[in-house]
Length: 458
Image (cartoon, rainbow, N blue to C red; front, side, top):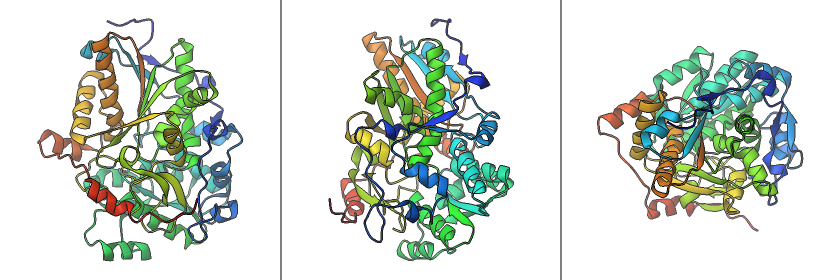
Protein backbone atom coordinates (compact mmCIF):
# COMPACT_ATOMS: atom_id res chain seq x y z
CA UNK A 1 0.00 0.00 0.00
CA UNK A 2 1.10 3.57 -0.58
CA UNK A 3 2.62 5.85 2.04
CA UNK A 4 0.04 6.20 4.82
CA UNK A 5 1.61 9.33 6.29
CA UNK A 6 -0.81 11.24 4.09
CA UNK A 7 -4.41 10.82 5.35
CA UNK A 8 -7.12 9.53 3.05
CA UNK A 9 -8.90 12.86 3.31
CA UNK A 10 -7.13 16.12 3.99
CA UNK A 11 -9.59 18.46 5.70
CA UNK A 12 -8.95 22.10 6.41
CA UNK A 13 -10.20 23.89 9.49
CA UNK A 14 -12.75 26.67 9.02
CA UNK A 15 -10.02 29.11 10.02
CA UNK A 16 -7.93 27.90 7.05
CA UNK A 17 -10.60 28.66 4.46
CA UNK A 18 -9.62 31.32 1.92
CA UNK A 19 -10.83 34.78 2.86
CA UNK A 20 -10.35 36.18 -0.63
CA UNK A 21 -10.88 34.94 -4.18
CA UNK A 22 -7.88 35.00 -6.52
CA UNK A 23 -8.11 36.88 -9.83
CA UNK A 24 -5.71 35.02 -12.12
CA UNK A 25 -5.95 37.67 -14.84
CA UNK A 26 -4.01 40.10 -12.65
CA UNK A 27 -0.92 37.92 -13.11
CA UNK A 28 -1.43 37.03 -16.77
CA UNK A 29 1.14 38.62 -19.06
CA UNK A 30 -1.18 38.34 -22.06
CA UNK A 31 -4.60 39.47 -20.89
CA UNK A 32 -7.78 37.95 -22.35
CA UNK A 33 -9.23 39.97 -25.21
CA UNK A 34 -12.13 42.24 -24.17
CA UNK A 35 -15.79 41.40 -24.69
CA UNK A 36 -17.28 43.22 -27.67
CA UNK A 37 -20.62 44.95 -27.92
CA UNK A 38 -22.61 43.07 -30.62
CA UNK A 39 -24.13 46.32 -31.91
CA UNK A 40 -20.93 48.38 -32.21
CA UNK A 41 -18.19 45.72 -32.17
CA UNK A 42 -16.39 47.93 -29.64
CA UNK A 43 -15.19 46.74 -26.21
CA UNK A 44 -18.02 46.43 -23.72
CA UNK A 45 -18.09 49.12 -21.05
CA UNK A 46 -19.33 48.77 -17.48
CA UNK A 47 -22.42 50.70 -18.52
CA UNK A 48 -23.08 48.25 -21.37
CA UNK A 49 -22.70 45.21 -19.13
CA UNK A 50 -24.76 46.59 -16.25
CA UNK A 51 -27.90 46.22 -18.37
CA UNK A 52 -27.38 42.44 -18.23
CA UNK A 53 -25.32 41.77 -15.08
CA UNK A 54 -25.28 42.98 -11.47
CA UNK A 55 -23.11 46.05 -10.93
CA UNK A 56 -20.57 44.44 -8.57
CA UNK A 57 -20.23 41.45 -10.89
CA UNK A 58 -19.53 43.81 -13.79
CA UNK A 59 -16.61 45.27 -11.79
CA UNK A 60 -15.25 41.78 -11.19
CA UNK A 61 -15.74 40.85 -14.85
CA UNK A 62 -13.67 43.77 -16.13
CA UNK A 63 -10.96 43.86 -13.46
CA UNK A 64 -7.53 42.72 -14.67
CA UNK A 65 -5.54 44.53 -11.99
CA UNK A 66 -6.59 43.43 -8.50
CA UNK A 67 -5.26 39.98 -7.67
CA UNK A 68 -7.60 39.37 -4.73
CA UNK A 69 -11.23 40.09 -3.83
CA UNK A 70 -12.29 39.73 -0.23
CA UNK A 71 -15.10 37.19 0.13
CA UNK A 72 -18.04 38.88 1.91
CA UNK A 73 -18.85 37.50 5.35
CA UNK A 74 -22.36 36.41 4.28
CA UNK A 75 -20.87 34.27 1.51
CA UNK A 76 -18.19 32.82 3.79
CA UNK A 77 -20.91 31.87 6.27
CA UNK A 78 -22.81 30.06 3.52
CA UNK A 79 -19.62 28.35 2.32
CA UNK A 80 -19.15 26.91 5.83
CA UNK A 81 -22.21 24.70 5.30
CA UNK A 82 -20.23 22.58 2.81
CA UNK A 83 -16.71 23.99 2.74
CA UNK A 84 -13.84 23.40 3.11
CA UNK A 85 -14.29 20.43 0.78
CA UNK A 86 -11.94 17.46 1.18
CA UNK A 87 -8.84 16.74 -0.84
CA UNK A 88 -8.83 12.94 -1.10
CA UNK A 89 -5.84 10.66 -1.60
CA UNK A 90 -7.08 7.94 -3.96
CA UNK A 91 -5.24 5.12 -2.22
CA UNK A 92 -7.74 2.49 -3.39
CA UNK A 93 -7.48 3.58 -7.02
CA UNK A 94 -3.68 3.63 -6.81
CA UNK A 95 -3.73 0.08 -5.42
CA UNK A 96 -6.13 -1.13 -8.10
CA UNK A 97 -4.05 0.37 -10.89
CA UNK A 98 -0.77 -0.82 -9.32
CA UNK A 99 0.74 2.51 -10.24
CA UNK A 100 3.61 4.34 -8.53
CA UNK A 101 1.70 7.58 -9.17
CA UNK A 102 0.15 9.41 -6.23
CA UNK A 103 -3.41 10.46 -7.08
CA UNK A 104 -5.46 13.15 -5.33
CA UNK A 105 -8.88 14.55 -6.13
CA UNK A 106 -10.64 17.63 -4.86
CA UNK A 107 -14.23 16.58 -4.17
CA UNK A 108 -16.82 19.29 -4.80
CA UNK A 109 -19.97 17.16 -4.61
CA UNK A 110 -20.72 17.39 -0.90
CA UNK A 111 -23.73 19.72 -1.19
CA UNK A 112 -27.30 19.27 -2.42
CA UNK A 113 -26.57 20.69 -5.86
CA UNK A 114 -24.00 17.91 -6.18
CA UNK A 115 -21.34 20.08 -7.75
CA UNK A 116 -18.90 22.99 -7.55
CA UNK A 117 -21.44 25.35 -9.12
CA UNK A 118 -22.73 26.52 -5.74
CA UNK A 119 -19.46 28.38 -5.10
CA UNK A 120 -20.37 31.02 -7.69
CA UNK A 121 -24.17 30.73 -7.46
CA UNK A 122 -24.22 31.97 -3.88
CA UNK A 123 -21.90 34.85 -4.75
CA UNK A 124 -23.99 35.98 -7.71
CA UNK A 125 -27.24 35.69 -5.75
CA UNK A 126 -25.68 37.71 -2.91
CA UNK A 127 -24.72 40.58 -5.21
CA UNK A 128 -28.16 40.52 -6.86
CA UNK A 129 -29.85 40.75 -3.46
CA UNK A 130 -27.47 43.49 -2.35
CA UNK A 131 -28.41 45.48 -5.46
CA UNK A 132 -32.09 45.21 -4.56
CA UNK A 133 -33.12 43.04 -7.49
CA UNK A 134 -36.29 40.94 -7.59
CA UNK A 135 -34.78 37.93 -9.30
CA UNK A 136 -32.38 36.48 -11.84
CA UNK A 137 -32.54 34.39 -15.00
CA UNK A 138 -30.10 31.77 -16.20
CA UNK A 139 -29.55 28.73 -18.38
CA UNK A 140 -28.47 25.25 -17.40
CA UNK A 141 -27.22 22.28 -19.40
CA UNK A 142 -26.78 19.12 -17.38
CA UNK A 143 -28.58 20.86 -14.52
CA UNK A 144 -25.90 21.41 -11.86
CA UNK A 145 -25.82 25.18 -12.35
CA UNK A 146 -29.58 25.56 -12.33
CA UNK A 147 -29.80 23.49 -9.17
CA UNK A 148 -27.08 25.50 -7.45
CA UNK A 149 -28.61 28.82 -8.44
CA UNK A 150 -32.07 27.76 -7.25
CA UNK A 151 -30.54 26.94 -3.85
CA UNK A 152 -28.73 30.27 -3.67
CA UNK A 153 -31.79 32.28 -4.71
CA UNK A 154 -33.92 30.46 -2.16
CA UNK A 155 -31.41 31.37 0.54
CA UNK A 156 -31.59 35.08 -0.32
CA UNK A 157 -35.30 35.18 -1.21
CA UNK A 158 -34.83 35.89 -4.94
CA UNK A 159 -36.95 34.69 -7.84
CA UNK A 160 -35.10 32.28 -10.13
CA UNK A 161 -36.01 31.58 -13.76
CA UNK A 162 -34.09 28.72 -15.40
CA UNK A 163 -33.98 27.80 -19.10
CA UNK A 164 -32.82 24.18 -19.25
CA UNK A 165 -31.39 22.61 -22.43
CA UNK A 166 -34.30 20.55 -23.76
CA UNK A 167 -32.56 17.18 -23.99
CA UNK A 168 -31.38 17.50 -20.38
CA UNK A 169 -34.84 18.67 -19.28
CA UNK A 170 -36.29 15.47 -20.71
CA UNK A 171 -33.51 13.13 -19.56
CA UNK A 172 -33.16 14.52 -16.01
CA UNK A 173 -36.63 15.12 -14.52
CA UNK A 174 -35.30 14.64 -11.01
CA UNK A 175 -32.74 17.38 -11.44
CA UNK A 176 -35.55 19.61 -12.65
CA UNK A 177 -37.62 18.77 -9.57
CA UNK A 178 -34.81 19.72 -7.21
CA UNK A 179 -34.78 23.17 -8.81
CA UNK A 180 -38.54 23.44 -8.36
CA UNK A 181 -38.21 22.30 -4.75
CA UNK A 182 -36.02 25.35 -4.15
CA UNK A 183 -38.59 27.60 -5.81
CA UNK A 184 -37.20 28.00 -9.33
CA UNK A 185 -39.32 27.90 -12.48
CA UNK A 186 -37.79 25.66 -15.17
CA UNK A 187 -38.48 25.88 -18.90
CA UNK A 188 -37.12 23.56 -21.61
CA UNK A 189 -35.06 25.52 -24.14
CA UNK A 190 -35.57 26.52 -26.86
CA UNK A 191 -39.09 27.54 -25.90
CA UNK A 192 -41.99 29.59 -27.19
CA UNK A 193 -41.63 32.00 -24.25
CA UNK A 194 -39.11 34.26 -25.94
CA UNK A 195 -38.73 35.73 -29.40
CA UNK A 196 -35.27 34.19 -29.80
CA UNK A 197 -36.63 30.80 -28.72
CA UNK A 198 -39.41 30.99 -31.29
CA UNK A 199 -36.90 31.99 -33.96
CA UNK A 200 -34.59 29.05 -33.16
CA UNK A 201 -37.51 26.60 -33.19
CA UNK A 202 -38.65 27.95 -36.55
CA UNK A 203 -35.17 27.48 -38.02
CA UNK A 204 -34.47 24.14 -36.29
CA UNK A 205 -37.77 22.31 -35.69
CA UNK A 206 -37.44 19.54 -33.13
CA UNK A 207 -34.00 20.70 -31.93
CA UNK A 208 -32.81 19.27 -28.61
CA UNK A 209 -31.27 22.63 -27.74
CA UNK A 210 -27.89 23.83 -26.60
CA UNK A 211 -26.43 26.08 -23.93
CA UNK A 212 -26.12 28.80 -26.54
CA UNK A 213 -29.89 28.64 -27.15
CA UNK A 214 -30.71 28.70 -23.45
CA UNK A 215 -28.38 31.64 -22.81
CA UNK A 216 -30.13 33.67 -25.50
CA UNK A 217 -33.52 33.04 -23.90
CA UNK A 218 -32.33 33.81 -20.38
CA UNK A 219 -30.71 37.09 -21.45
CA UNK A 220 -33.82 38.18 -23.35
CA UNK A 221 -36.03 37.41 -20.35
CA UNK A 222 -33.76 39.31 -17.96
CA UNK A 223 -33.37 42.42 -20.10
CA UNK A 224 -37.12 42.60 -20.73
CA UNK A 225 -38.18 42.15 -17.09
CA UNK A 226 -37.95 44.96 -14.56
CA UNK A 227 -35.82 44.16 -11.50
CA UNK A 228 -34.06 41.15 -13.04
CA UNK A 229 -30.54 40.47 -14.20
CA UNK A 230 -28.91 37.54 -15.96
CA UNK A 231 -26.36 35.28 -14.25
CA UNK A 232 -24.09 32.66 -15.81
CA UNK A 233 -22.53 29.54 -14.28
CA UNK A 234 -19.36 29.29 -16.37
CA UNK A 235 -17.21 30.97 -19.05
CA UNK A 236 -17.15 34.48 -17.53
CA UNK A 237 -14.21 35.93 -15.60
CA UNK A 238 -16.39 36.66 -12.56
CA UNK A 239 -17.36 32.97 -12.32
CA UNK A 240 -13.78 31.75 -12.39
CA UNK A 241 -12.92 34.34 -9.76
CA UNK A 242 -15.48 32.78 -7.38
CA UNK A 243 -14.44 29.24 -8.30
CA UNK A 244 -10.82 29.99 -7.37
CA UNK A 245 -11.83 28.91 -3.86
CA UNK A 246 -11.43 25.33 -5.19
CA UNK A 247 -7.81 25.77 -6.19
CA UNK A 248 -6.93 27.89 -3.16
CA UNK A 249 -8.22 25.22 -0.79
CA UNK A 250 -6.45 22.53 -2.80
CA UNK A 251 -3.13 24.35 -2.58
CA UNK A 252 -3.49 25.00 1.16
CA UNK A 253 -4.19 21.29 1.74
CA UNK A 254 -1.22 20.18 -0.40
CA UNK A 255 1.11 22.68 1.24
CA UNK A 256 0.21 21.31 4.69
CA UNK A 257 1.94 18.09 3.71
CA UNK A 258 4.61 19.59 1.43
CA UNK A 259 3.03 17.96 -1.60
CA UNK A 260 3.85 19.42 -5.03
CA UNK A 261 1.67 18.18 -7.89
CA UNK A 262 3.26 17.35 -11.22
CA UNK A 263 0.02 17.12 -13.20
CA UNK A 264 -3.28 18.97 -12.62
CA UNK A 265 -6.32 17.78 -14.57
CA UNK A 266 -9.80 19.21 -14.93
CA UNK A 267 -12.81 18.68 -17.17
CA UNK A 268 -13.53 21.60 -19.46
CA UNK A 269 -16.85 22.80 -20.86
CA UNK A 270 -17.09 26.54 -20.39
CA UNK A 271 -14.16 26.63 -17.96
CA UNK A 272 -15.44 27.35 -14.44
CA UNK A 273 -14.26 24.15 -12.73
CA UNK A 274 -10.95 23.95 -14.55
CA UNK A 275 -10.26 27.65 -14.11
CA UNK A 276 -11.08 27.51 -10.43
CA UNK A 277 -8.95 24.44 -9.76
CA UNK A 278 -5.84 25.61 -11.58
CA UNK A 279 -5.95 29.32 -10.64
CA UNK A 280 -3.29 29.53 -7.90
CA UNK A 281 -1.09 26.92 -9.59
CA UNK A 282 -1.27 28.71 -12.93
CA UNK A 283 -0.46 31.94 -11.11
CA UNK A 284 2.74 30.37 -9.79
CA UNK A 285 3.56 29.06 -13.26
CA UNK A 286 3.09 32.47 -14.87
CA UNK A 287 5.17 34.18 -12.19
CA UNK A 288 7.94 31.61 -12.65
CA UNK A 289 7.67 30.31 -9.08
CA UNK A 290 6.81 26.70 -10.00
CA UNK A 291 5.95 24.57 -12.99
CA UNK A 292 3.02 22.24 -13.50
CA UNK A 293 1.62 20.24 -16.37
CA UNK A 294 -2.03 21.33 -16.66
CA UNK A 295 -4.49 19.34 -18.77
CA UNK A 296 -7.99 20.36 -19.87
CA UNK A 297 -10.24 17.43 -20.79
CA UNK A 298 -13.24 17.94 -23.05
CA UNK A 299 -15.75 15.65 -24.80
CA UNK A 300 -14.93 14.63 -28.36
CA UNK A 301 -18.52 15.50 -29.27
CA UNK A 302 -17.99 19.17 -28.29
CA UNK A 303 -14.23 19.77 -28.74
CA UNK A 304 -13.82 23.54 -28.60
CA UNK A 305 -10.15 23.63 -27.53
CA UNK A 306 -8.89 20.68 -29.55
CA UNK A 307 -10.79 21.34 -32.79
CA UNK A 308 -12.18 24.86 -32.53
CA UNK A 309 -10.66 28.09 -33.76
CA UNK A 310 -9.40 31.00 -31.67
CA UNK A 311 -11.58 33.88 -32.76
CA UNK A 312 -14.25 36.32 -31.69
CA UNK A 313 -17.65 34.67 -31.55
CA UNK A 314 -21.06 35.24 -30.06
CA UNK A 315 -21.51 33.74 -26.60
CA UNK A 316 -25.03 32.58 -27.51
CA UNK A 317 -26.90 31.05 -30.42
CA UNK A 318 -29.32 33.98 -30.70
CA UNK A 319 -26.43 36.43 -31.11
CA UNK A 320 -27.75 38.88 -28.54
CA UNK A 321 -24.90 38.51 -26.03
CA UNK A 322 -21.43 40.09 -26.22
CA UNK A 323 -18.77 38.56 -28.41
CA UNK A 324 -15.80 36.89 -26.73
CA UNK A 325 -12.47 35.90 -28.19
CA UNK A 326 -12.25 32.23 -27.42
CA UNK A 327 -11.68 28.79 -28.83
CA UNK A 328 -15.05 28.14 -30.44
CA UNK A 329 -16.95 25.71 -32.64
CA UNK A 330 -19.31 28.47 -33.74
CA UNK A 331 -22.29 29.84 -31.82
CA UNK A 332 -24.65 27.82 -34.00
CA UNK A 333 -23.00 24.50 -33.11
CA UNK A 334 -25.37 22.13 -31.30
CA UNK A 335 -23.88 18.94 -29.81
CA UNK A 336 -25.43 15.62 -30.81
CA UNK A 337 -28.50 14.64 -28.78
CA UNK A 338 -26.78 11.43 -27.66
CA UNK A 339 -24.11 13.44 -25.83
CA UNK A 340 -24.90 12.37 -22.27
CA UNK A 341 -22.93 14.68 -20.00
CA UNK A 342 -22.64 18.40 -19.62
CA UNK A 343 -19.69 20.26 -21.17
CA UNK A 344 -21.97 21.23 -24.05
CA UNK A 345 -20.91 24.83 -24.60
CA UNK A 346 -19.68 25.82 -28.07
CA UNK A 347 -16.77 27.89 -26.74
CA UNK A 348 -14.24 28.11 -23.94
CA UNK A 349 -13.63 30.85 -21.39
CA UNK A 350 -11.60 33.75 -22.79
CA UNK A 351 -9.17 33.42 -19.91
CA UNK A 352 -8.54 29.72 -20.47
CA UNK A 353 -8.47 30.23 -24.23
CA UNK A 354 -5.68 32.79 -23.82
CA UNK A 355 -3.73 30.46 -21.51
CA UNK A 356 -4.15 27.60 -23.97
CA UNK A 357 -3.08 29.78 -26.88
CA UNK A 358 -0.02 30.80 -24.87
CA UNK A 359 0.74 27.07 -24.45
CA UNK A 360 0.56 27.28 -20.67
CA UNK A 361 -1.77 24.30 -20.60
CA UNK A 362 -2.71 21.29 -22.74
CA UNK A 363 -6.05 19.97 -23.97
CA UNK A 364 -7.33 16.53 -24.91
CA UNK A 365 -10.74 15.24 -25.98
CA UNK A 366 -12.24 11.87 -25.05
CA UNK A 367 -15.18 9.76 -26.24
CA UNK A 368 -18.10 9.36 -23.86
CA UNK A 369 -18.04 5.55 -23.69
CA UNK A 370 -14.44 5.80 -22.46
CA UNK A 371 -15.54 8.44 -19.97
CA UNK A 372 -18.28 6.25 -18.52
CA UNK A 373 -15.96 3.25 -18.37
CA UNK A 374 -13.56 5.34 -16.28
CA UNK A 375 -16.47 6.56 -14.13
CA UNK A 376 -17.52 2.99 -13.41
CA UNK A 377 -13.95 1.94 -12.63
CA UNK A 378 -13.57 4.87 -10.22
CA UNK A 379 -16.93 4.28 -8.53
CA UNK A 380 -16.14 0.64 -7.84
CA UNK A 381 -12.91 1.39 -6.01
CA UNK A 382 -13.36 4.87 -4.53
CA UNK A 383 -17.00 4.61 -3.46
CA UNK A 384 -18.26 7.79 -5.15
CA UNK A 385 -20.52 7.82 -8.21
CA UNK A 386 -18.97 10.64 -10.26
CA UNK A 387 -20.77 13.08 -12.52
CA UNK A 388 -20.17 12.47 -16.24
CA UNK A 389 -18.42 15.84 -16.46
CA UNK A 390 -15.97 14.95 -13.68
CA UNK A 391 -15.37 11.57 -15.28
CA UNK A 392 -13.60 13.21 -18.21
CA UNK A 393 -10.89 14.23 -15.73
CA UNK A 394 -10.96 10.77 -14.11
CA UNK A 395 -10.32 9.15 -17.49
CA UNK A 396 -7.18 11.17 -18.15
CA UNK A 397 -5.99 10.87 -14.53
CA UNK A 398 -6.14 7.08 -14.91
CA UNK A 399 -4.33 7.27 -18.25
CA UNK A 400 -1.55 9.36 -16.72
CA UNK A 401 -1.30 7.01 -13.73
CA UNK A 402 -0.95 4.02 -16.07
CA UNK A 403 1.73 5.88 -18.00
CA UNK A 404 3.62 6.21 -14.71
CA UNK A 405 3.24 2.46 -14.25
CA UNK A 406 4.87 1.91 -17.64
CA UNK A 407 7.75 4.31 -16.99
CA UNK A 408 8.16 3.77 -13.26
CA UNK A 409 7.83 7.50 -12.55
CA UNK A 410 6.30 8.50 -9.20
CA UNK A 411 4.37 11.53 -10.33
CA UNK A 412 1.76 13.30 -8.24
CA UNK A 413 -1.56 13.78 -10.04
CA UNK A 414 -4.35 16.10 -8.85
CA UNK A 415 -7.73 16.25 -10.54
CA UNK A 416 -11.05 17.91 -9.90
CA UNK A 417 -14.02 15.73 -8.98
CA UNK A 418 -16.59 18.41 -9.72
CA UNK A 419 -19.62 16.55 -8.47
CA UNK A 420 -21.72 13.43 -8.12
CA UNK A 421 -23.66 11.54 -10.79
CA UNK A 422 -26.78 10.51 -8.90
CA UNK A 423 -29.01 12.53 -11.24
CA UNK A 424 -27.30 11.05 -14.30
CA UNK A 425 -28.66 7.51 -14.12
CA UNK A 426 -30.33 7.78 -17.54
CA UNK A 427 -26.86 8.10 -19.05
CA UNK A 428 -25.39 5.37 -16.85
CA UNK A 429 -28.29 3.10 -17.91
CA UNK A 430 -27.55 3.71 -21.59
CA UNK A 431 -23.90 2.88 -20.96
CA UNK A 432 -24.68 -0.33 -19.07
CA UNK A 433 -27.22 -1.45 -21.68
CA UNK A 434 -24.70 -0.94 -24.47
CA UNK A 435 -26.85 1.76 -26.08
CA UNK A 436 -24.44 4.65 -25.60
CA UNK A 437 -22.87 5.84 -28.82
CA UNK A 438 -19.84 7.98 -29.48
CA UNK A 439 -20.47 10.81 -31.85
CA UNK A 440 -17.59 12.87 -33.15
CA UNK A 441 -18.53 15.78 -35.43
CA UNK A 442 -16.93 15.65 -38.85
CA UNK A 443 -14.70 18.41 -40.17
CA UNK A 444 -17.48 19.26 -42.61
CA UNK A 445 -20.04 19.66 -39.80
CA UNK A 446 -17.72 21.92 -37.84
CA UNK A 447 -16.97 23.94 -40.94
CA UNK A 448 -20.65 24.78 -41.37
CA UNK A 449 -20.85 26.42 -37.91
CA UNK A 450 -17.41 28.02 -38.15
CA UNK A 451 -18.27 29.57 -41.50
CA UNK A 452 -20.76 31.78 -39.69
CA UNK A 453 -18.26 33.34 -37.30
CA UNK A 454 -18.69 37.12 -37.16
CA UNK A 455 -16.23 39.29 -39.03
CA UNK A 456 -14.26 41.26 -36.47
CA UNK A 457 -11.47 43.58 -37.55
CA UNK A 458 -8.15 43.18 -35.79
